Image (cartoon, rainbow, N blue to C red; front, top):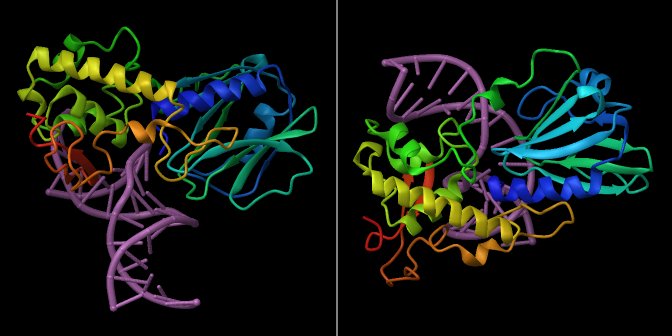
Length: 275
DNA sequence: AGACACCCCTGAGAGC
DNA sequence: TGCTCTCAGGGGTGTC
């Protein structure tokens, strides 16, 4: 399940593999992913252009091309990228194929098709699109701090865990890291936003930075299908303290880890360590 | 406007 | 062994 650390890992690898290379052809093999795929627009915007820079914003990948064209990509739940020789037969679920000038291909693989591949033409005013413009600050950047979080969530009766998943508040946190960071902060996921003091917000911010930084260093988490561009799995799974451990003893105090559902998603926490 | 339910989709795993 | 069922959770839309 790609969240910020997984997307960051992929962005760095794609940058290393692809920056400076030129896209000659684009082929789409399904009509839509999360949204309809605009094959014609994709070809017009991307073919013949050189990949200058690949970065990340929240859980989105942003590819800057020559002539000020751009690609915006999202991995959804099961999206991964592969860089393969043209002679390698196209596999099932390889929905978008970018052919490179040197005979290799950059392929987007996504069984559940929750991902996104969209392009932006030079000289249009549709950049940045709403899905990027509406994102909150980067959790590892200077704008995400205790006072900011406190200001955002004071007065909200919604649970802190649900608030942290709102990409407008802070960009890049998903279901796995939300449970993990609240465990490290010692705060119950069900606590209403308005019931977090300023120091508690500072602890949440601190725990967020720690967890995400460690996860990036480990190359992300592979809960089910995520692999990086080289086909390797993330190593952070072994460092998860509560996620996926419902009923098992807390690694700090031994009390059983509890699992509950919040806003339709599984949440894990230790009722003894988290208040 | 805030809070919530529901939808898209496939594969893994459980249970019978 | 093979079927059916549930669940995973990104982000977007619709409703109250």
